[in-house]
Length: 259
View 1 (spheres, rainbow, N blue to C red):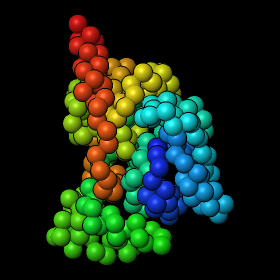
View 2: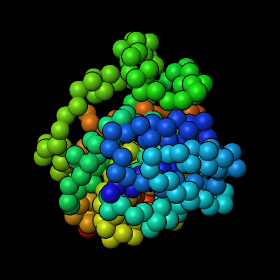
View 3: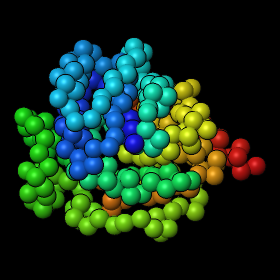
């Protein structure tokens, strides 16, 4: 079984669409662990309203809002996961019906996967958030027009899906295309590096740090592009005041391991 570790913070409308998209997967052999970094009660109400008739189990983990502490709540989610394979997803992302299927195809011992995303602009995001329920068929029927209007920044990776292969493997650590909103690894591998570095607080680069430490621990990084694309809803940039310091700390770790 897989465990979807779904990070969220105070955007219940987006979380509702995300959960609804997970509820329409063509492979339902997974659970959802919601890693809630201190959202208010409106988020809990959305989760409680959905989970009653949801096709897979949903567990809601919550911690007090003391600033951006995503690493801490994600580590709690890793510990709580019953699945042996973990897929990390953010609550501002909507998934395609084959999201679980594609991640399962790419799951391989000794590997982690860094997935891909399609960015949605503000107008399309506003439109989707007004839908009463998520419908992939409705969305997919207008993919080409969304691309022409700039509503989405990619088209072909949504139409052409590529399978597994060694061509997906990275030879070494690179910063590019690491997205904490869509990545996956085995639970035993995450536990072997003690999960995310909880001393990294504030937005930025906790995902790169996680991937680097997995790779340093002999886990091979694999690209999930042209297979696992998620739809990333538009939102204002988070407070990036800690990003430079977090990046410095990751570079420091990389340098120390190279010596």
